[in-house]
Amino acid sequence: LLEAAAADPGGPLAELVARNAATVPAYGEDLNLAGALHLTAVSAGSDGPPAPPHEPVERPDTAREFTAFMTGPARVLGLVGDPGTGRTTELA
Image (cartoon, rainbow, N blue to C red):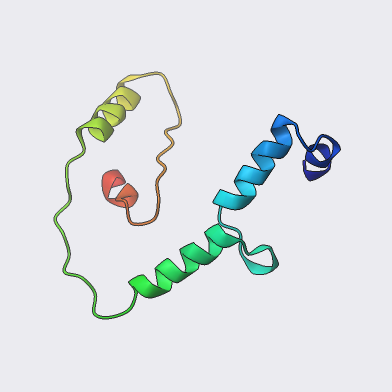
């Protein structure tokens, strides 16, 4: 993919790869700004005592999507989101 993007530096694939490199966290020897920001946010967020637990918040849009999935023909449901956004709670 990188070779194809390099073959046409001004093309749409090169633009997509550059945007991905800048915005999608990468770690280790590929550490980029997005990865560094994610790592520092995690370490800064874990400083101090834990916050008191919150009651789950009902999300009508998610409930509608689950209902549509359960009553529809689909066999797989993708539930995506950042860590801490309640994905596991929604599944429970």
